[in-house]
Image 1 (tube, rainbow, N blue to C red):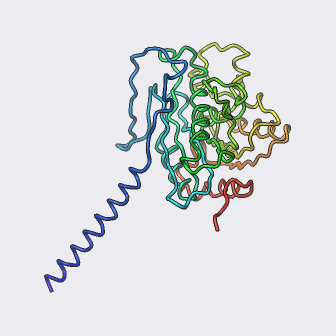
Image 2 (image 1 turned 135 degrees about the vertical axis):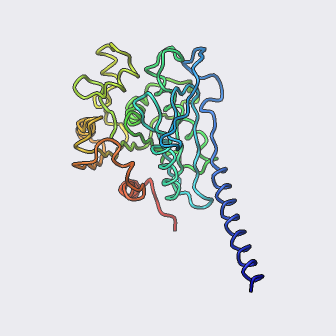
Image 3 (image 1 turned 90 degrees about the vertical axis):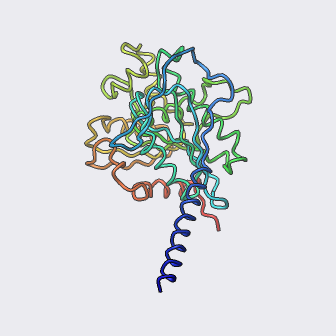
Length: 315
């Protein structure tokens, strides 16, 4: 009897080890690549060093990001449906909430057959950039360009590449979605920089005095930005008929980024006949979805993607 118990115990241990190995292989299959294969545009020599952030002893994100990367999450072989999303974590343009607003989201996307690309964009700083106001936008444009150029390699449909952002990352996503006609990166191939859709989660949209999250505005534009600069980076004032279709969510009691940011953007989209879907909730405050299982709150995103033809279930 003892030998049988030992044998069963060994089998269970080997099975557990196999599960760990498979899990490790799946994790290793996700790659991090440099965003630029040549010189980083708008960059100057610097001494700033990136800092890894931990909250309650667990990895949370990054601060002082000067070297942009793209972390690639691809669905299991044969499970992809061609859709892809570039994810821009938030953090007030002062840090990146990379785990909760990046990795957790990417894992949910690939479970639904959507390729996900987490953008670790440069955080605006005069110490690393000639013009800090365009640094994050350059990285967002480069991410869209890179995914579109390597779409065949990654199993992506070039017409199903979206961008998603949280908080200040939502500002970056909306900026990429409203300024794609102005290339801030080298693009001799003239690859389209236009995201096919946007997903904005409690996003900073406006940098106007009445609506701005001032921390984000100051980090991006400095202490005394010109009225022209404020207007240019207020996405609700940059919407056109060609702005990508957009999914939006926010809460009415958000004390960090007031809900009017989402409302004015939604109204601008409607006025320009851009398809938009908005989900507003009375309570939850800023970051409300981070305490909810991703499968629960992202379900409406997948339904929206399906209804627009970006998420087709394979037969």
